Length: 335
View (tube, rainbow, N blue to C red):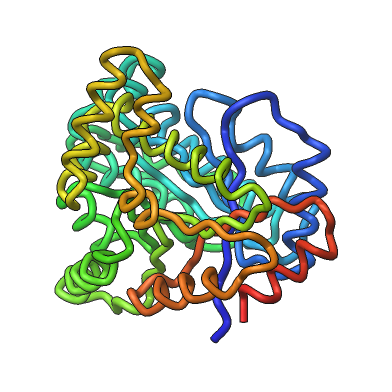
């Protein structure tokens, strides 16, 4: 079975533009399905998306994620519509709600009602991409002048993926989106979560198989396994302890309440190292898989388990600078 492999670019630090271009070209050449660029309160995603679109030919390009507070839905339609032309139809829109802290204290926008805001963003973006006059009467957006984009779009619909955790937002995603980014769901429970998600889509009159689902965790290939595990644990601890309540509630919901309690206690004591250490081996192994380049059998088993659970897109990270070695790893994992 051929797996659709995806890779991401982070949002922190000073961007390495030349490195991004070369890395993206390599991903394109070896057959990675899609590259995803994140955005939080670091560099913006769209400048980097432009570079990737301009220097690649086949790989799909998406945001994982941009939030629905930093820009209006009309601005997103402009951004993605323009980039879809530049990339000749390879864009994917990835949206999320971020946390209340980011929405209110970085963007200065009231967080709630988050699900209503997401619904209206999806509706408005879809209307503008389809060339429909923008007459929309929502709870948040009341747009009645009939604006349309002043350019011919590459496609009348760009796929929209949504990062969703709580039940209401997951339900909305199943009803309206083209793809789902599950968040912090352990592998052992991923199959049940995806089955429930697809049943909601079916009830809404949609074809469940037409909606993509990306894995919530990554398969990481690196020569420094312990460093990768520590970095992943640090990320889990940061989101559980420092990014509001959604992530901690999600992890508790899936059986990691003890770990969450210890993580929060560590953050309250301003001890980041202890917070990372509070991520148990069980929790870490459920959320990611780390292997060395010479030992890819377990990584392939992990991909197979994710596919069997219903995932259609598989997040991977490959820490390898040599292009030939990178290509060999991708070839081994993708088949």
